[in-house]
Length: 69
Image (cartoon, rainbow, N blue to C red; front, side, top):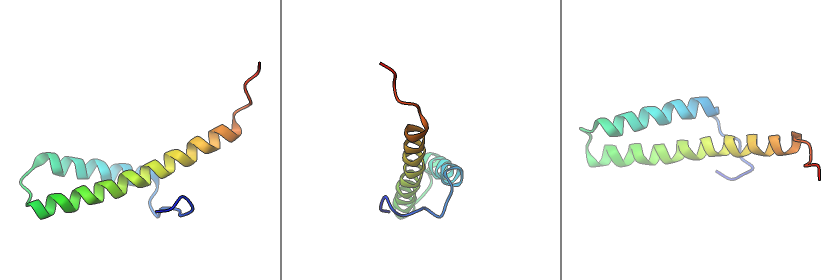
């Protein structure tokens, strides 16, 4: 995903799915292929979350008053 692209999931949706991926990986009992697939999905979801956090940080920087000397 480039910085110009808007993810299809909201931050909250991506975070919730990421938490589910982590729970499934921690529970174990998966094949190597299943584990790798979940890991890759987790990486994608982390990227979506980071996108939203970066945009929020940018908006706050614009909205915040400049530091007074």
